[in-house]
Amino acid sequence: MTSAPPDPLPPWDWVTLTEAARLVVERGYAPSMTRQRLAQLAETDPAWPIPKERMRTVGPAKLIPWPAVEAYFRARDARPGPKGWSTRDGEGSADAS
Image 1 (cartoon, rainbow, N blue to C red):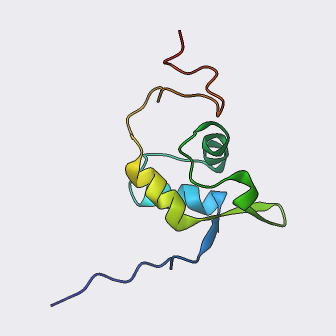
Image 2: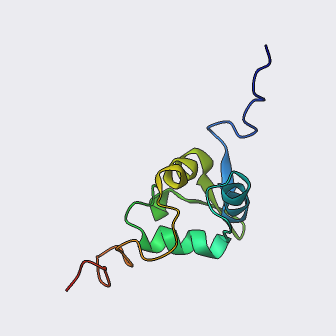
């Protein structure tokens, strides 16, 4: 009986936004992703799992915990188009009339 190879990222690993974007695509959560898009999601999506103050900065890079980001993308609606929000305070929401 063969077992699956261990996940290359243990739960305590923090990754840069660039590496997280690569993993999102590599693991099939989105067809494309950039560090800029991840930063935009962090700013605008109320469901983003990592508060800005929890992100770590090392040199010019921002680090985020991969397990939290992976769980976010696993649960996220991957279909293109508006998700019903555009800012954290609700301005621009698709539900606003």
